[in-house]
Image 1 (cartoon, rainbow, N blue to C red):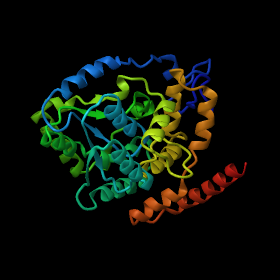
Image 2 (image 1 turned 60 degrees about the vertical axis):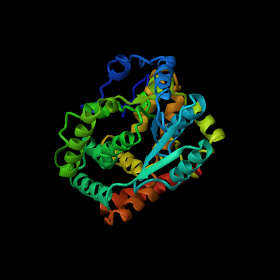
Image 3 (image 1 turned 30 degrees about the vertical axis):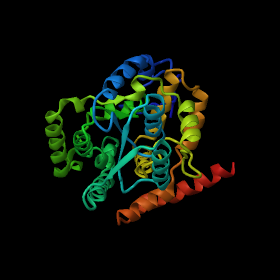
Image 4 (image 1 turned 180 degrees about the vertical axis):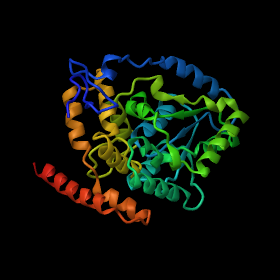
Length: 338
């Protein structure tokens, strides 16, 4: 399929069109992200640091690179007393768990971990995956992650219980996938369960009980996201590591990311990495050649992880997907030999 001449996004009928010059709409309409000044963040955090209480701020951590850097930045650079909070996702990669233990130990911060009741998360993924397999749709891929979207009431309750005035997130603006916005025109339908809706209600009730928690601080909205700086600091200062043999340091912390990559490749022919690197190219943070090289390698599916997810969900992999899996294994093998 034809690919944009400026970024690396391909033409996708009904979603991404290229003009006569071979340029996509996102590149034509691109505006650099409006970064706020780091001093603004420092002033805001200074106010929180002057309050009484055991903690100045909370950082939600996953074991991934950006949340690790955020925790490091708040503790080492800003001198804050931070409570780290982690949702014990049943699909968490073992290396992410090791990273969490290392960063908490290195930075000497307190950690609270919590789970959803019973096997609720697994049941939600199982139900939504079955629905998707019945009728694959790119618009429905995000419902696979619904388990991690309903945890915010718990996080805000922890903040309130410990009188923490500020929740800081490590999400960065380049992760906001553009094609997801276009796909939102398709109704999510039956994939959303009554449990999800109940938790949305709970989130609203919790938020209106304390409106200050509706305004978390996003670190990378105040400082530029620099992949080299992030990786250099977390690897050298808190012994953070990606999984052995991992093709990417981005979003490995949850095994479901491999499943989402597969679902997007089946329905769109791209993954979120294509969009992520395209955004970096548009902002001059990565060359187009490097982006193309990365997605060629990083868009290879981890079939072992896919099979592990189906086993964990006690689901049999459909024959057509199993055949796709076998073809993918052979393709990965040939790519590695080259």
